[in-house]
Length: 84
Image 1 (spheres, rainbow, N blue to C red):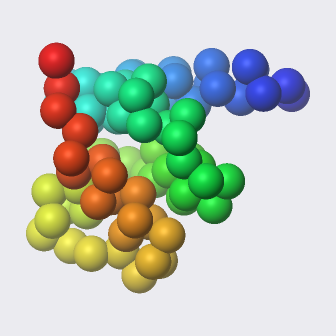
Image 2: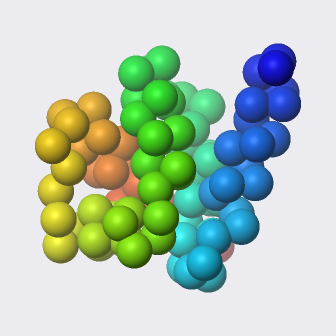
């Protein structure tokens, strides 16, 4: 699978969520911030994108903190995204 196909699959996972809020937030993050991430941060984001909304939402809104410090970095960036 090439990089373009991987990105398309990730875009699908980010924008076809159970929660509209997550669709908008993850989609905006993918377009604006994801290209600037380090490889470790990009891997952490992919892992988070694979989470169910009910598992990811408490991390995004700050009710729970991740154990992984790289995920914490990505979440800090994600929390600063403003949806258009």
